[in-house]
Structures are given as structure tokens and as C-alpha cells.
Amino acid sequence: MSTHELYTIPAELSTWDVEMKGSTRFTWEYDEGRDRMLALYQKGKDKQWDSVRRIDWGLEVDPYNVLGIPDQSIAIYDTPLWHRMDDKTRKEVRRHGAAWQFSQFLHGEQGAMICSARIVESVPDLDSKFYAATQTMDEARHAETYARFLQEKVGIAYPINKYLKSLLDDTLSDSRWDMPYLGMQVLIEGLALAAFGVMRDMTTKPLPKQILAYVMQDEARHVAFGRMALRDYYKELSQAELREREDFVIEGCYLMRDRLRGVEQWENLGLSPAEVEEAMRATDESQYLQLFRSLLFSRIVPCVKDIGLWSERLQKAYADMGVLEMAGQNLDALMKQDEDVAERLDAERFAAEEAERAEEIAETITLGSGD
Image (tube, rainbow, N blue to C red; front, side, top):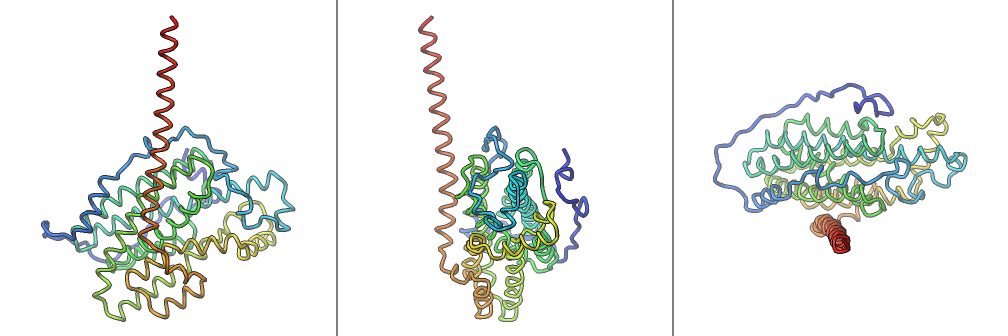
């Protein structure tokens, strides 16, 4: 089935062409590289995996209860609008909410794949080109995984959100080689990582937990890559150049915050314009979603601080968003946790499979001895 047949609202075009600027850079220095970057490159090679084999696609998913989390997480829960809905409409609210969220994950992963390829093309250092090449493969695998999940398990999808599209446009159309790092590795990947983490920890369903955990294991390396490259480069920039990057970060963070409102899903549920407005007010006032938004910046804010973009002006913008306190998060600890969760999930799955296999062998031996 074509993905265009799954879209709840028509995608604007079958392709989206972004005019790119800047230079393609070759380097003839093959012998030198930063030890930290080359170690990350080796890890990127070692940790490649196949979504067809590592993920258990035989697990069933209820499209009307994709994550198995309480309805209290829905923005309009316990509002007059929620109470006016019948059970059938509430089921659609759950389905469309999950479809919208995973669709944006999918589009973001394709954006990450293209940005990674752009980094390979434009970054001047060979060690960075090496690592970005492994990330391009990672992002292709993630896009493949989310596309299959939406097609086979959810059954509907949404086009790219206009705010995510705007940030991708700004990131890819900029001629400076560091902007794909800043836009993708720090902002889009940072927010996605936090969203994946909240959903990974809340879901009671094994298939989405596997997908989110395994994708996050890769993304932890990607954010480390962006931090490493930009921290080194931004030490060399002037105050005027740093201010330009801070402007980009501030605008991008507001775009990411507004993306989370998800007006498309409410417009597509057959609600009246007045009811859509009612749903959006509930979204803005939801205490759960306010906490969720705050948690989503738990990876971005400390990363921005770590790479050297931390003027009073930037801190004021984060205070206005209500996320300044996230600057105290320990990024290394969070990334280590992401890797540990995926490894532990693998160990538990394979231990259970080994136990089942041993039981089958024992039953076979028992049956054979009875003959």
C-alpha cells in the first residue's frame, strides 16, 4: 500500500525540494583524526543493527491503544469536549494521537538522514565525515522502522507538521556547514530523544517499547557527535557569529514547542471549528502536556549550554519557555541510560527466548522417551 493512501490529509507533493547552499568539501588528510571522534565512529560501526531481525514484528498492536497508557495523558481528557464524545470517537482520538506522533517521528528521521548526508558532504574534517556516514545509515534504518510500524500496525499516517518542516528548511538551506549539526543533532534530535524516552518509559506495549529503545540507543551517539563537533568549532567563533547561532536556536526551540500542539489531529477528527479551538485551549492548559513539553527540552537545553551557546539572552528565552531548569540535566548520564535500557531489553528478550527453546527441547525429549 502506498503511504499516500494512509495519510489522513493529503500530502502537499510527492516530494519536497529544498534548495541547498554551501560547498561540498573534500579533504586529502587521511591519517589524522580526533581520538574521541574516531572512537565514536568505531562504536557507530559496531552498533549497526537490522530492524527486520532485531525487532519482533510478530507482536500485535491495537491501533486504538498503541502505547497502552492512561487516557489522562490525552490533552482533552476530562474536559467538556471529552465528556461529549462517545466511545467510538474517543478510540479515534487515541489512534490519531499516536499516528500523528509517530508520523512526525518518521518525517524527522528522514530529515535526519538527509542532514547527516549533508554533513558528510560539507564538514571539513574526515573523522566527522566518517561518523556522519554511519549516522546516515542509522537514520535510514529508523525511517524504515517507523514507516513499517505506521503501515502495518497503526494503519494511518499524517504529513509533516509545518513547524518541523520550517525548521528542516532553515537547517538545510543554510550555507554554513555547522547548521545541519545545530538544527538536527541538537534541536530536532534532542527533542526527539526526549519524546522517545518519555514514551519508551510509559508504554506498556512491547513492540513500541522495542522500537523506541533501539532507536534511542543510536540517537544517544548522534547527539554526542553533535556536541563534540560543535563544542570544538564554537570556541573559534566571534561573538557576532555566536549570536547568529543563538538566534537560530531560539527560533528553532519556539518552532519545536509549537509543533507539539498537533492541531492537525483535532482538525481531522470531524470536530467543528469551535470544538477544534476548544481542543487547542485544552492542549495549552493541560498540566500533563505542560510537564511533557518541559521534559522534551531535557536534552536540548544542557546540550546548547555544553556547546557554548549560553548568553543571558538565550537563558531568558528558555526561562520564557519554562525550561531553563533543564540546564542542570546530566547529558552523559541520560545517554548512558538510553544505551543500558536497549541492552537490558535485548538481554531480557533473548533470555526468554532461550528459556522457551530449552522447554521445547525438554518436551521433545520427554515425548521421544515415551515412545
